[in-house]
Length: 241
Length: 257
Ligand code: HEM
Ligand code: SF4
Ligand code: FES
Image 1 (cartoon, rainbow over the protein chains, first blue to last red):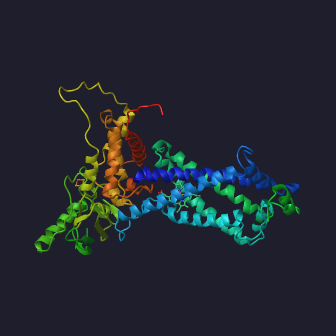
Image 2: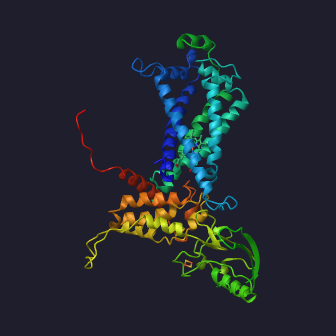
Image 3: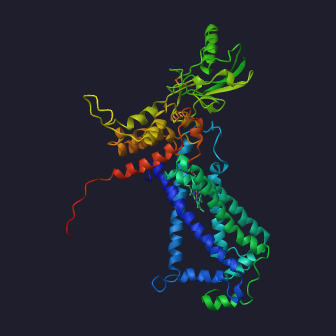
């Protein structure tokens, strides 16, 4: 499979599907923050803790989280390696001085590499900010998710970065979702309009779902974190520094 | 009608090429693009200058030989073969750019002529179909549902011109290969070798150096035979089945320990 162009493209489609499935779960999970500060114990904090204690004591603390992280890392590495190898092959098949005239290809399709690279850059930034708390411009506190989100999204430039990333994501997905159906051989003239529409709708739902969180924090629709967020996080999560 | 032609000239496969400008005058609007080039060549001959090499055979849109790129579009602006493109489709006095296909797998032999034998080798890799010879078979012995027949014939109309390769930013031949595989793999005659056919044709396609598909869809826009993009989906499916079928089919022996 890995050796042929079609096999490799199939692997791109399958790893892409894994990433999309995760994005949907992540987006739905994030919507927990819309429950607001929740009088002392914000639901998003509870949700994060639930994810980590999921399956205990059968599965060790944060076991599921780490398993998902491993799958995602594997999927994205394979996705990128396959895509870069295919791109190298494709470049070699045509004389570079004579690019094919554009008649039908969409902008999203042309920009897959660009949107992809920007997505990686954003993912790294995002992990450094909210997971490892390394990019700590608005004092971040381990375990105090709601407060962290609230504080971060009071800054216009952080909101702008997150919304910009959603534009790249939307651009990538609008082509990717339809494309993966074609790669997997699910498309046909009868289904094509429906699949195109489905790809647009799924893209829109994912992008809007993610966009809600920073927008609602920034506009003040989601209120201030509970005053005891910090101490609460220390006691309930037993962690923090 | 009068035109200014900007034409690619290249003496041989390994030579550098460049564009050359020629004026043609008094062209009949109902002349085909190739007839217009014939007139230009006749004049060049009279002037004892080397004629412009281009390919053609049937001149009725069925052989796929006339592989020009006109104004950046393989075959020309009308989504029909170059020989079926007429000068009335151009504005009088227009400047028209004429190039060979641009693909490293279909290299230029001379001027506008490219070597399309890589496409033949892909077909060859598909192999034969098993069939019984002898007395004429009973015409009703091999029923085919009309829908299947229609879909197979829609794919069978591919003339192997290679415009899809020339139109593809990745120089991919999946529309062509997909058309061939769809055609044979849907029909009852194509069933015995179904899996190997798709597997071998895709491997040959890769070996020739054609690029991979990124689902841009430029190929089917350029295709003079209106081959539908879903032949690529079919090719992908058939290739995966074929690859899976390459594993040994015989069950292995189970022994204790
Ligand atoms: C959030 C993460 C990502 C998701 C959900 C995702 C999803 C997808 C999907 C579903 C496809 C379509 C596969 C197909 O039709 O075969 C795809 C293709 C592609 N992805 Fe991603 N991807 C992600 C990240 C990336 C990254 C980080 C890169 C960058 C380098 C990238 C570059 C590409 C490229 C170049 C294609 C090929 C487009 C094509 O050949 O049609 N993607 N992606
Ligand atoms: S698929 Fe269309 S463009 Fe490609 S070789 Fe066949 S007829 Fe020509
Ligand atoms: S010369 Fe045969 S298709 Fe144009």
